[in-house]
Length: 81
Image (cartoon, rainbow, N blue to C red; front, side):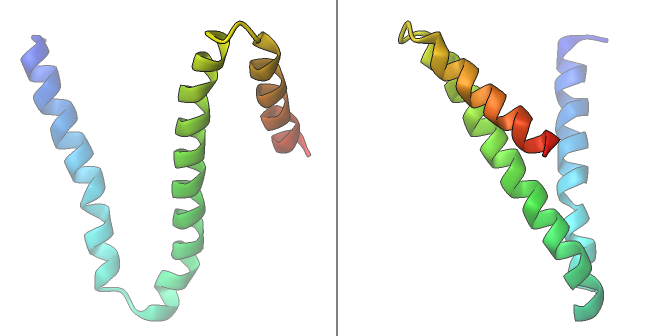
């Protein structure tokens, strides 16, 4: 498949995923509350994960590789606990 086709396919896929939020507008308040907490925590985790894993390689440029090791081991220990 050519590159342009993959670009269009991935754009349509991401757009379709973002339309899932439209279905929750029509739901009643009690049914959205049980989904809302999970989706907010998923969004926060995604944003924090993106921020940390994009900034950690930049810490290697500071010639102090211990920062990368400490943060990554802290994240792993957090998920194990």
